Image (cartoon, rainbow, N blue to C red; front, side, top):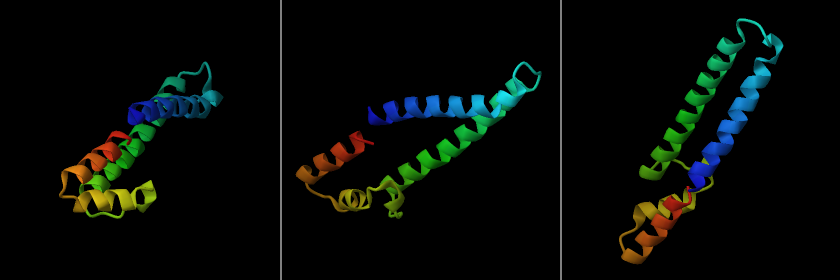
Length: 94
């Protein structure tokens, strides 16, 4: 659920930034193209960030940039049911 809310906020941010980037071309024939190119760039960058977070959670990568290093490392070492449920809670909050 937190990911969905974060993505909705990110979409508003992306749209605002791209509208601003194209504001000098308002009414011109290139305005739509500038917005589309800007959104594409934002989407590629966001996809890379999300992919890195997924890799961090599923591998031995350094997760310090996401603020979850200790939690992720603990989950990777987990073998008990109690610890597994704690890891699921962490996953559910991302």
